[in-house]
Image 1 (cartoon, rainbow, N blue to C red):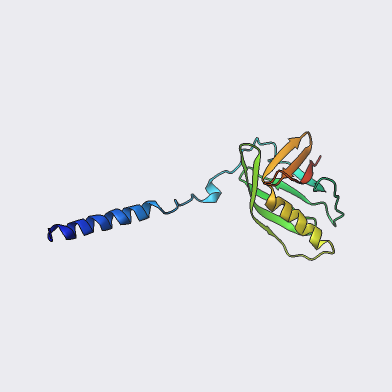
Image 2 (cartoon, helix red, strand yellow):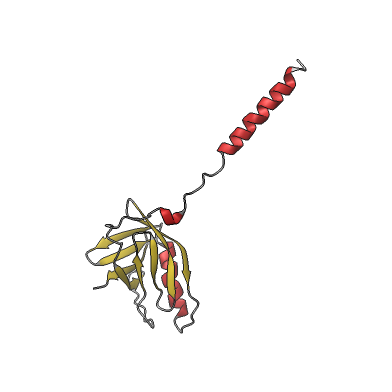
Length: 151
C-alpha cells in the first residue's frame, strides 16, 4: 500500500494541474484581425449627430457631438469639445457596446456636457433606429439620448 501512494499522489497532482489549466480564460484573438460589425449594418458608415440627451435635453456645444462606426468596429467622433476614439460591438437584438473610449483633453466651457455625451455612449446597452434617428437605451431600458443621421 505504501508503494501505490506515490503513484496516486502523482496522479492526483496531474489531475489537479489539468483542471487548473482548463479553468483559465481562453486567449482572445488579436482585435485588429477580427471584424466586430457587419459593413451593411445600419449604424455602420453613417455620421450620427447628437440630437438629445435623455428624452428632451438639447445641448449647445462648440461643435456638434457626433460619431461614425467603421466596419472594423472602430468608432471616431467628437463629444462636442474633444475627439473620441474607441471600439464598438453591435450584437444581435440591437445590442450596442462601446469600449476603450478615449478622448483628447482639450478644455472648453461646456466640458461637463461633453463628458455627459461620452458617458451616454459608455452606458448604451441597446439601440433603436427609426428612420433617420438612432436612440440609445441603458440596461434599465431608460432612454439615454438620441442621434440623427447626418445628410
